[in-house]
Image (tube, rainbow, N blue to C red; front, side, top):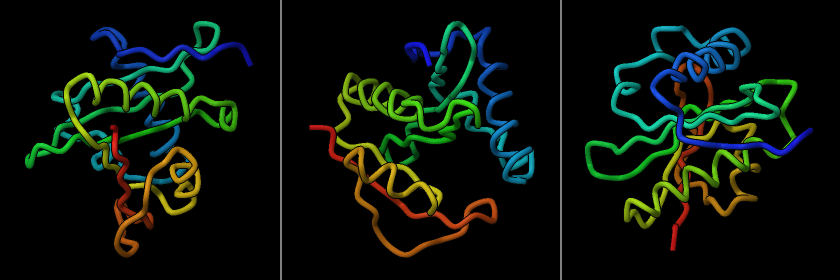
Length: 144
């Protein structure tokens, strides 16, 4: 695969981000659309991963009510998985969080991809829990 470019999505690219999330979470994983597309989207910073101009992945960064910064809705289209897209998306989110002065990044990882996040330096915490009917683990990474 050609080089992956990850950038903050422009306002006119939000639909591309949402389309990837629909493909991955709603169509593939069966997450109800009303749970996937939520009220937080308007306040989040969205990122878009492109390969040769094609939208291949997305993620969003959200500041929670208690001031933590959280990586959410990390999605890579099936044909582009295991090609570094997820790693590039996470690097972009971490860089953006660092630039805003945050000292750690938190996320809720689906259990099958916990090892992916561990390879990136995240540490799982607490027991498994269900989110949108899918087992997850809370994870965190210091950004220092």
